[in-house]
Length: 468
Image 1 (cartoon, helix red, strand yellow):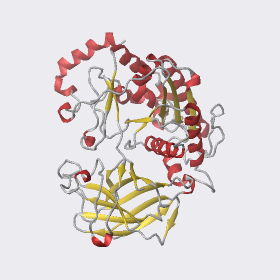
Image 2 (cartoon, rainbow, N blue to C red):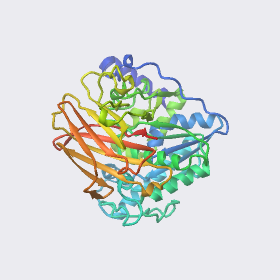
Image 3 (cartoon, helix red, strand yellow):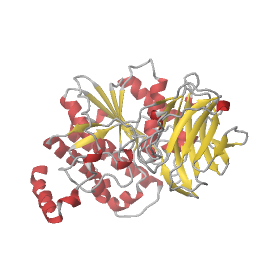
Image 4 (cartoon, rainbow, N blue to C red):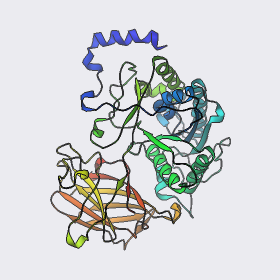
C-alpha cells in the first residue's frame, strides 16, 4: 500500500535532491477551483477512448461519485487492441495475425472489468463499443453514409469483432458510432459527462470528444443538458516527472498557461490515491511496458477543463476591411490586440489563430509564430454542424495550404471548384472558406496543424466556433 511506499520516495528525494522531483512550477498557475461535489442519485457518464483511460484520469472521480451515492457508467470507444509494443512486452512474442489483435482487445476488456470492480463498479456498469483502436478519427473525418466502411490496415477488420459487445458486427462507419453514443446518452440521461480532451494528441481521444459534441447537439431538447468535463492524458512531455509520485500535484501542461481553459481539480485522499494506484496496476498489459508513464497520473489531484466555445459577432463587410477576429488557440500565442481583447493570448513570440465570419465566408486568420518561415503551410480540419441536416450528410472538410494555393477535400474526395481563398503577407495568412462549402453550419469544430516544409511544427486542439 502507499503507506509502506512513501518512505522509499522520501528517501529518494533526499538522495537525488528535491529539485529533480519538482513538476511544473505552480507559480505559473492560479489556484484551481474544486470540482463540483457529486450528489446522491446523480448520473455520471465516463467516456474512455481505451481501457485504462478511465483509471488514469478518473479513478478519483469514480470513488467520489460512488461515495456520494451517485451512479456511474463507463463507455469505452475502443478495446485498445492496436498497441503492438505493449502486446509484445506482455505476451513476449511477435505476431501480426488478425486473431491476436482481437485477443489483446479481450485482454484489455477483462482488465477494465477487474479494475473497475476494484473501484466499486459492476460489469453491468461498463459498456464496450469495440470500434477500431487508432482508427476512429479516420472514421469521423471520412467514413459516413454509403460506401465501404473503414478497414484497419493492421487488423484487416472493418466491423466490430467482439461478440459480447453491444455493437458486435457494426461496420466501422461514423453513423454507427454516433448512434451507439446517442443511445447510451438517451438511455442513461447523465447529469455529468467526463470525456477525453479535444487537445489530446491521441487521435481516439480527441475523436471521442468530437462524437460527444455532435451527439449532444443532436439530442438537444430530448435530454437535460449535462455538464461536460474533459480530461487530458496525452500531451508531449507531460506530466513530469515520470513514474509514481504520490506526493506531487498534477498541473496542466505549460502550453495551456494562457489558453483560457477553466481548469478544475478533484483532490484525492490518501486512501483514494492508493486505490487509484492499485486500479492502474490491474492493466498489466499496459503497465509492463508503460508503468513509468501511467503511474505518473497517480497524484494528489485529477484535472478537468475545456476550451470555451467561441461565439462570432456580427461583422461589417469584408470589402470594408474592418473585420474583428475572435478567439485564439493554445499554440499560436502572442499579446492580445488591445482593440479586440478577446482575440489573443499573452505569451510573447507566439502567433495567434483567430476566426471571423463575413460576406458568407468563415475566415481563419493565422498570425504566424516567429519561428515559422513566411512560406509556412497548414492543414485544417473543419467539421460543420447544422441542426437541420443529419451530420452524416454534412461536409467533412480538410484543407491543405501551400503558398497562395490550397487543396480542399470533403471526406475522401478532392473538391476542385471549392471557392476557398488565401491572402498572405509577411506575418500572417488569411483563409476564407465559403460557408456553403461547410454546409452552412450553426457551428464548426476546427483544428489545424502548421508545417515547415513537410514537418509539422505546431498543432491546435479542436475548438467549437459558433457561427449562428
